[in-house]
Length: 114
Length: 145
Image 1 (tube, rainbow over the protein chains, first blue to last red):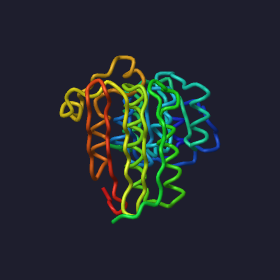
Image 2: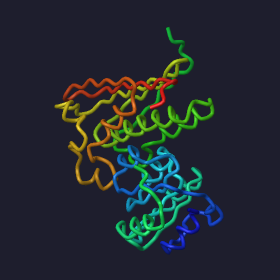
Image 3: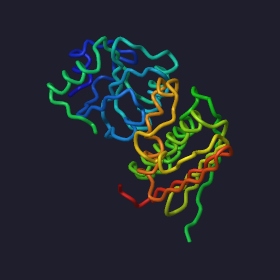
């Protein structure tokens, strides 16, 4: 599924650059615990998290995550967004909560990345 | 005898949350540039990143030594910190002595050391309470875990 479609269904705001939403994702990893992401994310997974600090972006980079969706209306700061840009990781934000985001993506056929 | 190709030493500051992970990121780029297998890179940088986060959360400072040979990658993280009272417990998934503040940072859920061990082909930990902890991890270049 294209990141652009995920953006639409989750009513996301794009915090990085709009032009990098053509990337495809098939698996998803969802957690506020970064070690869990590091332990279980498959390379290329979409990461769903409510943790917005700079370590969320570093974790995504180390775990080879393809894109990040921040939930519950939370926004990372400019430093974190800039690091994501440097790492070529698109960053989106939705007002939906973890349960709804995971439920919607699963119904659309995406699989758990664990 | 394996031939040493590259050795680098990094200093990691305790409590430096903002910059934690920079060493792992630098190692990742370096290994990519050399052309190391992506699964080996992944395992190596997860080890380095978790080790850095442990230093940031618990220790005052540490030295991370990276060694690449023609057979393996070795990481040794030696910190000056509180040490670990019960290493077996610390290696148990889910066991943690982290504070709420650490958990708010997204770490401290009792998976750091288990993650390091899981990604290592060889793993060793030595700790002295009140002095510090040394974690040694090795990833073979030909491993495909």
